Amino acid sequence: MFRLTPVVKNLLIINIVVFILQYTLSGMDFTGLISLWIIESDNFKPYQYFTYMFAHGGFGHILFNMLGLVFLGPLLEQFWGSKRFLIFYLVTGIGAGVLYSGIEYWRTSELEKDVTSYILEPTPDNFSMFVDEHSRYFRSAVYDFANEFSKNPDDPYYISESKAVVKSTYQNLLNGSSMLGASGAIYGILMAFGLLFPNTQLMLLIPPVPIKAKYLVLILGGIALYSGLNQDSGDNVAHFAHLGGMIFAFIMIKIWQKDRNKFY
Image (cartoon, rainbow, N blue to C red; front, side, top):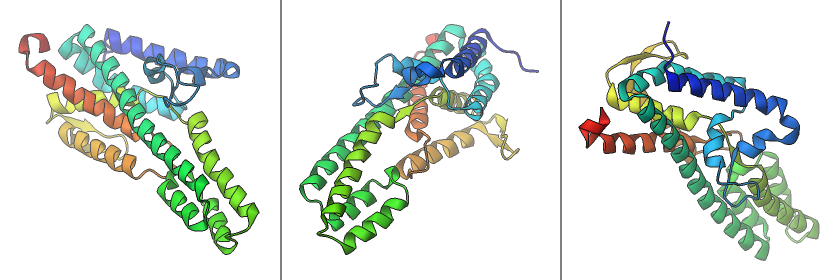
């Protein structure tokens, strides 16, 4: 039976308590208050860079994140000490949020430009281009509408509806796009483990096969990058936050390794 170290134990308790509060205080939208919203949203608050990493979207979400924390976290805490491990956890978690915000800010800005351009020239071709360019925000039904619009290019109804669809895409992004979960910090822990103990064998849960830590990090990093660049409308995972946790973990460890006295 593994032994929980002090910081890992406290982080586990905090995550569980917050998860319970998300359900008991659902009437006041507690989850919305502590999730990380995109910067352009009226719901965004700076403190969310800290609070989002203690909230979760469901039992499976918190279960897998906490498994990663309790299996790998104690080893790193014993290796670094409690203070340094806590700093690492918080910085990678906040860093994941920062990268997520940066990517979403760029995406939102590009979307806003395209919305403005379409409103000026609402044609079937431009609508199809808009939908293809921002396909991650649409369900399949929008393509049926685009097909009907192409058959009725001068119909005021389709022109008006197409404008409404385009505008609502931007508004829905502002009001409905948020991130929550400890995944960024957990991916940071995985990166640290892969760098410090690269040849250690880890046992995957699904499928239950052993794999060296360094290969697991490479696989997960590749998946996060690919999935982030090719995200579709049914994928609600913040892949760039996962990647952000790994990037900040890599940077921190390389900085600490320059001063061996501080690192150990």
